[in-house]
Image 1: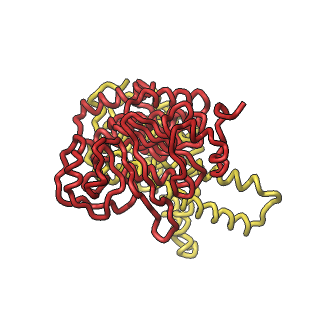
Image 2: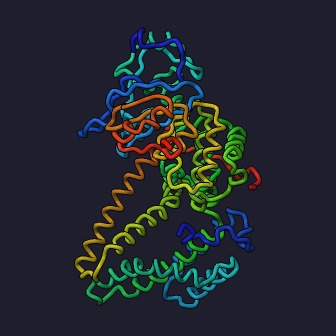
Image 3: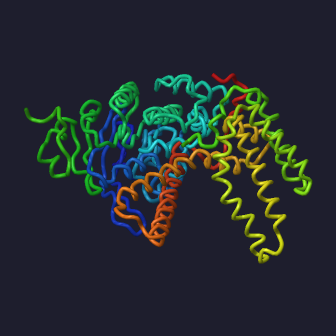
Length: 278
Length: 220
């Protein structure tokens, strides 16, 4: 990372010149650049196969499978990393993603994953413990918190998603909406500063969708939401990134991007109902 | 489908109120008795079977429910047992055949009793306190969590196949499409395993199992 590439302002997420391909496959992401300000909600839209999920997985360090190495400076964890420390450090394979000025690298991955909460598309992938309590407690336990702190976090997180008292319930016997909310409670329990949400509204009935929107609106950190539900993007997101064919095709204010009929049609999308010309 | 094996796990019978260790040791004792009593001692085998039958009644587990689960178990058990006399041209091994059938049935019924008198998470916690290795517990926990998810997936694929079957398939076609289904399910299961691993990493998992003894706190 060069001196010039470090900016004085501290975005919650900074993605710079990010390209990615699976071994032996075509490019999935090509030269992606964007930032997310603290507290900002970003909608990540695009047709199926555009690379949205792959991009989100980079924010949490789930991809690439071999993370870059950071050599030299010892990070000042757990607070944000002063930008001059980043510039003085030597980085192999340049990290292209930074969270709170912390490069996503092998040495920082535990802290990055604490800061970036990731919600998977299919709640069955994310709920892997037999009971709700164990599942929500999974993250805090891995953070090394005491038993009492873990219990408190589980109680608070479940209350924040409207599922207080669900601790002993089996994860097998929940509705889809409840499962999504338990997943979110598991993410909240780690107290992240950034949420990366992969299709959080898919297959939800209107009531469950409204509940989820209300929960997300209460979250004070930054969010990036990959979704096909463009009406919700209009309702929830400050800005939109349009991804197609692994490239960032447009970025800007929600209404400017989603209301642009030609742009939307060019990338296989539709203008949401509320932005359609009367 | 998700309560196929432990529908009565959160019941309120006398057996459900026993301490977890008592339930686990009772089950182990019944399985030991079922597997140690020689099959030639008919009355003793009968007594063990009666004890297991009584345990189910005491736990208010309907015998029809146990019988239906046994119907799923018996074909596998039968195949295992019949292989012995068949390997000896049907001349010997019939006593062993009966032994495997009887002991397998009694042991399976006892295991079924155990998972129906204590919730699975309580069973895992009890095993953990007995210092059963974490890896084994993780395998049990994930198997319990995802067995029925995969079963549902298989069910959906079978429905999709049936929806496009416009005539009765031949035996060869049935076997071929069944093999395709199983192969497809395996690939999906591997993909899912990948995603679950990602979900665990995303919440800070570093390969070590950590847990809280929930028995210390009153359950809500």
